[in-house]
Length: 228
Image (tube, rainbow, N blue to C red; front, side):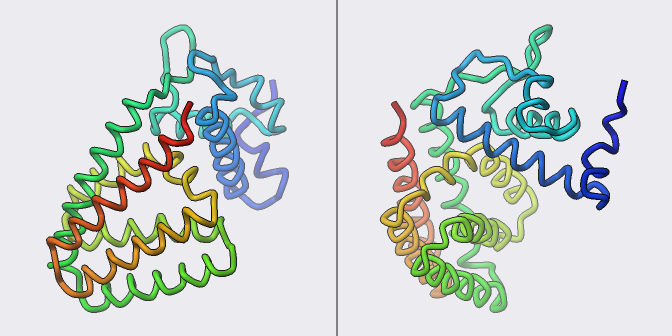
């Protein structure tokens, strides 16, 4: 039997990095298909079938499946393997509700605790995101959006809150990404970010809390509107 440990690296001759690219790509495609309903709840994600579909070894497929499980889009069931979980409106609402509470708290603390350099960095990122929006760079905006919310989590200077926030963000990442697909939504998101940035720059904890709660409600509304 062929050894999987080096197959993807050998394809590019560049160490382990290509495998990470493959697994990220595989996870992203499967996430999109699960969220859209193209892959239905209860479907078994077979490693062998996926290796044939994506033309890779088992290693990146296993990494991608691990990502799906970590994001609660699939679960490992004894004797069945990795199976797609049911995504209900109630479950999505619960995740956004929890994330809204965490991000609101983090915004409140960041407004009080961020250093001058951190505040300047957040403002600079928001300005760059405005340019991405104007140029229609959806992919770059999605990436920067993750960085924006990471900066707010890290601005709390509280390791436990950062860890908790990142775990919830990991689960919500496919849904938050899916709602940034239209120019109209990106424009609205950017305007909401402006209010959040202003509150943090003004050291206004109550306003940072309020604007982040509204931002998460707005994102949840967009995601739920796309669900059947």
